[in-house]
Amino acid sequence: MKSAVVLLAGLCALTAYYVYLPLPSTVSEPWRLMLLDASFRVAQQTCNLAHYLGLGHHLRILNFIIGTFDKLNPQQAERVKITDTQFDGVEVRVYEPLGKAEKTLRRSVVYIHGGGWALSSTRGSFYNNLCSIVAESLDAVVVSIEYRLVPDFHFPVQFNDVLRATRHFMHPEVLAQYSVNPSRVAISGDSAGGNLAAAVCQEMSQDQNETGRFKLQALIYPILQAFDFNTPSYRQNEFAPVLPRFVMVKFWVDYFNGNYEFAQSLVVNNHTSQDVSQAGPFRDRVDWTTLITPRFRKTYKPVTPTVGEVEILRAIPSLLDVSAAPLLAEKQVLRLQPKTYILTCEIDVLRDDGIMYAKRLEDAGVEITLDHFEDCFHGCMIFTIWPTRFLAGIRIRDSYIQWLRENL
Image (cartoon, rainbow, N blue to C red; front, top):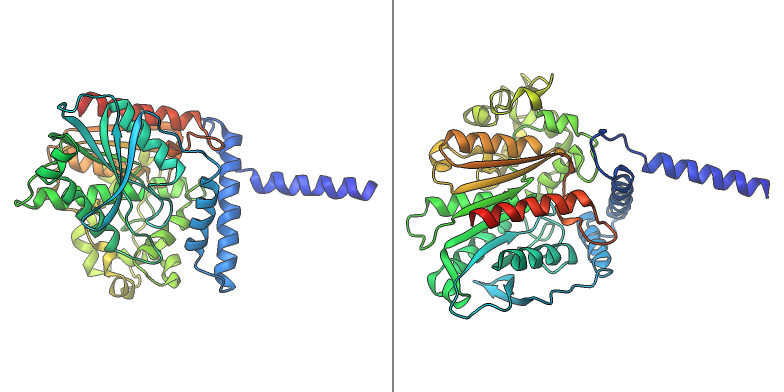
């Protein structure tokens, strides 16, 4: 009996040690966040082990686990009509609010889900819940795009899928089919979805043959660059919950179907060292010493190695492709962007990506709303349903919807 008690106490201590994660004092519901992060780490480490043993790609296994977990949440949308269809061969889910007169033209949101270009689905409970609430709250038609995922497909497939589906939807006859006002359409997305939304918005804004234009773009903690993995937010949140720095770097490597052997070199910016000539034209576009305020810079200094690994960009040239990294766009492209909302979280490696993009857009003359939350973490906007219901997630979701309500 005494041995069993000692063993149980030891297991409890080990569990507490594994779960505990130092968090800023500002974070809301810290123990709930620690449990969520511990669950993520268990799932990721299990999938990495399975990958190492040759049982399958770790991202494919992780997506299966997420899909299984999704089934625990019943999907209800009593006031929204949900239709699964295809736009130019790309799967989409369309949310149409019920109860409006047929002749009334609605506003609309094209939404792209996050998940590191590899995880989640428009049909999963998290995004189904989010898009249903957005459609109902705004009385808007929401088009959620089911782009193809890593590891079965890699850049630029995801970008092209979203671009094709969005262009199809923006045709006047398709907008008319869904009773959408062509002058009241926004494009939006979170995390990797924010990356795709920004890239597609840039692409369509430059095409003079486009029949439609977005009134707004709304980006939720977007991924915007793979140039510098040592911004203040990357270093401050190196081991932050849900999305630590090395996990984000691996998402980039997987997106480009690159070699994992480059991951550690990417972490220390060897791919954009001073001897890598291809990186030169982009340095001022990711210069966080001028693009973010002292409040966020704190005491961090830039990491720019004198000598790096020029072979990284030879092997993965897409690291500097603007369609993958919208923050690298030229100023004349940024001038063409619509009124923009960017939501950032303090406990997030991607915080400075969003802040830098907001500053560059503002400098280009674009009207910007930067909505920053000190106590929130990456991904929290979708964590609003049991068993991962965070009050912080509900708060930032409501702030996002309120901005759309006032501006769309």
